[in-house]
Structures are given as C-alpha cells and as structure tokens.
Image 1 (tube, rainbow, N blue to C red):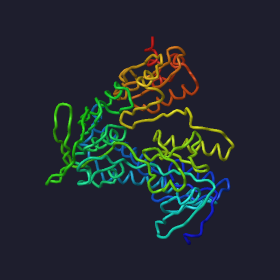
Image 2 (image 1 turned 90 degrees about the horizontal axis):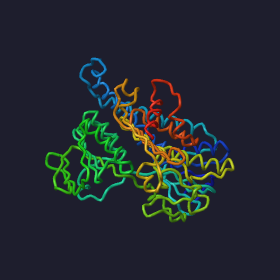
Image 3 (image 1 turned 90 degrees about the vertical axis):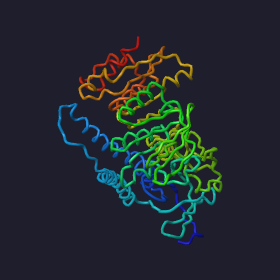
Image 4 (image 1 turned 45 degrees about the vertical axis):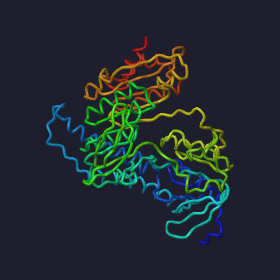
Length: 465
C-alpha cells in the first residue's frame, strides 16, 4: 500500500486493550468500517502482562502454599516440589488461549481490519502506521480511539543502567526461579509478586520508601498485610531509600540503602522495579493531532472521554486515573452508550472497586478511614479480625481483617476494606449494598446461609454501637 494514499475508515482504534477490543467488535457489528492498529499482542496489559498471567501464577503459588500446610488439615503429603517450568508453561497456555479468542473474533468480524504496526498521528484525523512487516499505511477517520495503555516506570536510580533489571512483564518470562528477588516498591504489584515468588521458593526482600506498604490504604490494613507477608518469610524494609545499584564480580546485584538510622547494602540475584507506570504516548506524536496531555504524558479527556481534539477519545490507562481493567472496560461501555445508543453517560462519580490478589486478598471499595477523615465526614467504623468468621476457622484461613466505614447519620456504607479469604467477593457484596443504598443495619440483621463468608457481615456490622 502506498503510504501517500490515505485509506478512509469510519473509526480507527489504536491499541487492543480491554476497551479497544469490545469497542472494535461493536462498531464493526454496527456497520462501521473499523481499523484496529496493534503493534504487539492483542488483549492489552490485562491479558498479556497483568491480570491473566499473574493470577495464573498466583493460583499455582497458592497450591504450593496449601500443600505445605496439608498437615494442619490432617493430610500427609511428601515434600512439595515446584516445577517452575511447568508453572510458567501453564501460565503461557492460558494467556495464548485468551489471545486466540480475540484473534478468532476479529477474523470473524465484518467491516474490521486488523493492522499490525505502530501508529503515529500526522494530523487531527490522520494516522501513519509503520507496519511490523515493513512499509507503512496512512489512515484517516472521523472517530479515533486511543487505547495504548501504560508501561512500567523506570526510576532515576544511579547504576540502574549497569545491570539487567526486571519489570513485572520480564519477571514472568524468566526460565528459572530467582534465588533472591529484590523488589523496589511496596504497592500492589510488588506484594503480589513478592508473595508469589516466595511461595515458589525464592528468597524475597521488599523495599519501600514510605512508612507503610500500600500507601493508599489505612495503616491498620497495611500493617496486617505486612505481618502475614513477614510470617511467610518475606523481608520487608520500610522507610528505605535505594541510593545506588551495582553488580559485583559474582553476578550479585547490590543495592545501597539509606534509612533514618543507617546506610547499608542488601544483595540479591534479581531486581524487580515495581514503582508505577508511564503512559504509552511518546510514539503517538499527539501534538500533530492537537491532543493535550498532562505533565506525565497521560492524555487529558473530559467526562465523556473525549480529548482536546473533537472526535478523538482516550480509553483505559493511557488517560490516567485508576489503572484497572474493569475501569477500562467501563470506558468502553461509556463510549458505546454515547456513540451507538444515543446516551449521555459520563465517568463522573463512578465507583472504583479493586482487589489486591495477595493471599488472602484485599478487596476495596469506596472511602477508607483516612479518606473519610480527610473529607470531614462523620462516620463509624465496623472492624473485626477474620479469626471471628466461622467459615474462615473451619477452613483454617483466619488471616486478615474486615473493616467498613459507615455514615454516622444515614447508616449508609461509605467504603470497606476486606483483607481475608475471598476478600474481593465479600467486597463486591458491600459494593452492591452501596449501589442499592442499603443501610448497614439491613446487612447486620439479614439472614445469610450458614456457614458462608456472607454471614460474617452480620458480625461485622454488629460491632457498631
């Protein structure tokens, strides 16, 4: 195809993430001539680098952990052996299954053209694609949707360029287990990978510059998380700044650390950097399209996800804000309802539930105690340990804490943190109650099946005077 001959489409979608994929299928089904541009894997970060592969690995790690605990249940087994090659193979097969599913749906869709390459704006409604196979194509469209996501952020750290360091993506591609995994960052990604690889058999040291893990969470929840991770043998150092990175003659990675009390060194075989993400916008040449970004490179949008250039939209992580798959998918729903169904839906005031897939899970919805205090709310707290839950006792999974924030005047649930077995599922029950404006007293007095985790809500909300 001659790069100087533009091809016109009704819609161009740049990136096939959790918003771009269903949007492409919906637009093509409605008869829109749609071009989808993807430079690497279909499915975005969730399927290829995030949810699907990591939760597959978490599942294997949990089986290993439960097998080691079998004597607690009166069950005898031999020594637990982790075949990491087989673990990785299982993960890869699941990821490929998801990718194949998208490829098949795209192949079957009419009016949809999949173009493999990297997109670059050359005008407000014009895109040049450097094709993976060589050459280029020039496309124009009345509607353009950007769903290019983010990549792991690299810190400005002296000596980092002298070693091979890992991201959450490259760590999952290692052929062998790290002997001693050093993790920079005490956020969700660092904790999930830290516990996972500890259960696979690696030594793990986690370094966090703040005074607690999970900086967004209440300190009592973060402290409980740190407690059980330490119980599993993970070394956690808080209030710790990494000053420099180097590699010694034996191949070990050395980190020079600084705390309020001392300066010392920790050594390990591998280093994972897990300190956040940066938007995939550099290659897009957004200036040529008149698309504004913030100082970090995230695309600015209004409440209907439209950028500063009319007719061009940003969906998913590339626009900043909560970086969760379900938020990206909700972005797709908003675009679909507004463009195809004549709706007027916005992102204003939508809930942001999330789950940290440590074991046990941390399910979160709404306000934390810290946030409610900052907002000047008058509230009450319902809190109790998971060791009070009958189902948790019966299954020997009593680690964790349940906590809910309730408006003192209305009795409405403002938020919750469920750190315990199936914490994400219990959190979703409270989210549904919040959506339906069900007061906490209705859950306190509800009849739930025994013995289920749901009935723990009776006990939880009975803690409020």
